[in-house]
Length: 393
Ligand code: NAD
Ligand code: MG
Image 1 (cartoon, rainbow, N blue to C red):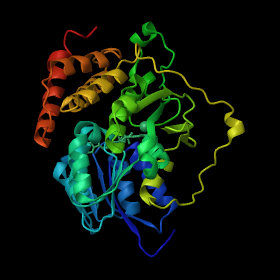
Image 2 (image 1 turned 180 degrees about the vertical axis):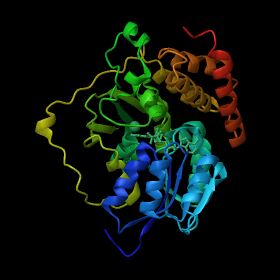
Image 3 (image 1 turned 90 degrees about the vertical axis):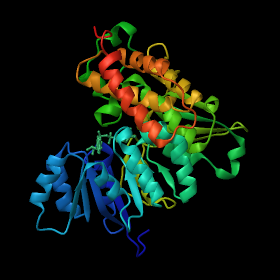
Image 4 (image 1 turned 60 degrees about the horizontal axis):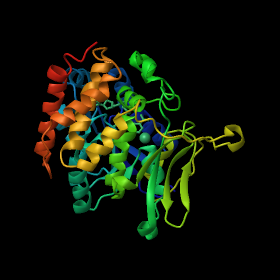
C-alpha cells in the first residue's frame, strides 16, 4: 500500500449514502486517493459545498441548474469547473486522468454516465445496480470491448466476487445471495397493507437512500441483485439462490460442485466493499472494527416469502425473459416507489404496478440504448398517469 501513485476518483452521487461512505474511505487513506470530480443531483447543496471545500475537486457537476448556479457563485474564486445537467455528469465521468469512477447515483439515472465512463476506459466501482438491471447486455459488452474492471460495490456481489475463484469457475454450482428480509420480515399480509414510507425506510441493518430502502422492504432490491449477479458473473438464473439471513453477517456465498461453500463475512458496513472496489486487486488494512463471533452468537437462515414479497419473483421472471423486460421492471419499480414515498399508493400496490407494466409491455430482444431509454421514459409516464389511477385505495 501507499506507492507513489495516487488513485484519482470521480464520485458520481457524492451526497448520497454510498457517496458519503466512499468519502469516509478516502478519509482513511488521504495520501492514496484524490477526489478529482464529484457530482450530485442537487438534493443537499449545503453538504455538497462542504465536500467541495474539503476535497477541492477539479470538476463538480450538479444536475439541477439552479443549484449549479448557486455553487458557481460561491466558488467563483477557485479553479473549479462547475457543470450541470446530464452532460455535466457525463463530463465528470469521462474526465481525463481519472482512474476509477464510483457509480453511486440512485436509479436508472446512473446508466448513461456509467456507460460513458466505461467507453472512456475507466474502471468502475459499481453501486448503481439499476444500470446493470436496465442494460446488462450493453454494459457487459462495453466492459469487454474496453477492457475495464467492473468492480461490485453492492455487498452481496462484492462477497461473491471475493469467493468466486476463476480457476474453479467450471465447478460453481450456484451463487447464494443473502437477504436481510427487510423491516417487514414476518409481517402478515394484513399488516403489510398499511405500512407507511417511514416504517419502510427504517432498515434493521443498513442505513441507505430512500429508494433502495423501499426496495429492501419489498424484496425488489434482492430481485435487482439477482439480475445484477446474472450479468456480473455470467451465471444462469436457475443457479442464483436467495436465502434470508436476518443478521446480515454473511454477505453472500458461492456453492461449488464438490460440496464446498465459500462465504464472505463481516459487519454490515458498506465501507468494506467500497474500499475493496477502490483498492482492487490489493486489500488494504484499515481501522474498522473486527467481527466478534461470540457477540453475534447465532446466524439464522430462512426461505424468502414470495407470497408476501412477490417483487423477488417478478425480477426472476423479467430476468429470465431478458431483452427489454428487466428495464421495464426497473422503470416501473422506480416510478411505483416514488409514488409510494409520496403517499400516492400503498405498499402492496408497488409489485402490482410492476407486474401490470411487465404484462402490458412488448418484448424487444437485444434492445439498443435508445430502446432502453425510451422504454424507461414511457413506463414511468404510464405508471404515473394510467396504471396508478384506479389502483389507489
Ligand atoms: P442516495 O439516494 O442516498 O444517493 C443518491 C445520489 O445520487 C445522491 O448524491 C443524489 O444527489 C444523486 N442523484 C439522484 N438522482 C440523480 C439524478 N437524476 N442525476 C444525478 N444524480 C442523481 O442513494 P444510495 O443509497 O447512496 O444508493 C446509490 C446507489 O447505490 C443505488 O443504485 C443503490 O441501489 C446502490 N446501493 C446502495 C447501498 C447502500 O447501502 N446505500 C448498498 C448497495 C447498493
Ligand atoms: Mg446489496
